[in-house]
Length: 63
Image (cartoon, rainbow, N blue to C red; front, side):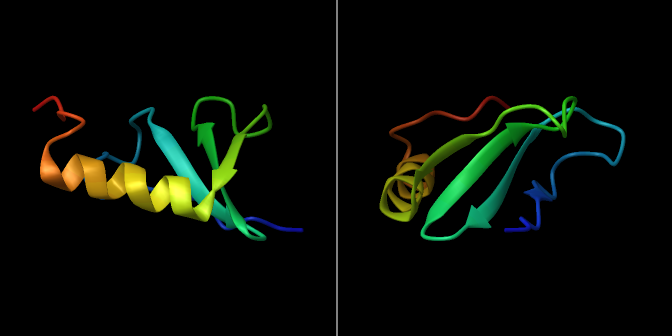
């Protein structure tokens, strides 16, 4: 299965960052510095809760 990877719009094109992509019923997360390396696969629900937690301040974001 091919994954279309996305990275934050806050990242410059040459910046190293975390990328995410939908992989079946889960979300894959990887390091953009190693695009052929391993990815962490988590459930879509866990990803949604993580993103929600960032939005509500549960997971502070460095600025």
